Image 1 (cartoon, helix red, strand yellow):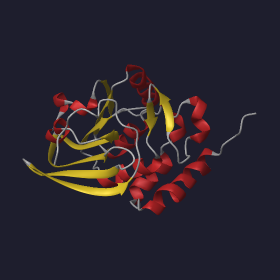
Image 2 (image 1 turned 60 degrees about the horizontal axis):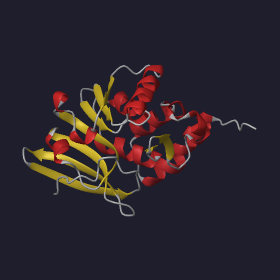
Image 3 (image 1 turned 180 degrees about the vertical axis):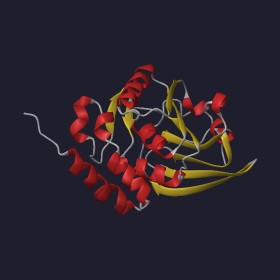
Image 4 (image 1 turned 90 degrees about the vertical axis):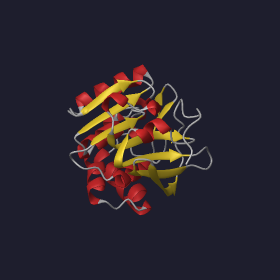
Length: 220
């Protein structure tokens, strides 16, 4: 028996029950989360769970971020329409779709080729034309298109790699979930000078570790 889900209501409930109560209050961000259809970026077997407060498997060991992390990431980055954005860890393409609505151009890098193809198809189907999907290790950044105004790390890292920090513009922002389970923290890093970075811990949250995230990395 197939259970029918009212996705419009589920989307509203996600925003009002999972995201807004945890201090995601930016009206543009909340409006975007209401507008973009998350169910179109979820594997068919999990479509009815698109708005649940749970990790959704994408295959190949990957998972979608919890909606709360997605909301906080968008709010923290404070994207502007003229900005260039890098996403590390494309997954199904959902976060790239959210970023694209607030930025001029998004480059998103996925280490698993099969997922990169899924994301390309999902983004194309959604009619989103300002996202370029690349295959590779996003934790190395994307030097060919750097520097970036903002970087979204869609997964957890033990520490933030130097390569990503170096590819931020001055005044650029980077959002990541930092640390090893069970203690992981949503973190915003701002490049305040050529060799100067400011780090702000936002909220504790669990996220899947990116595949190559356990390599030695930059230490503040």
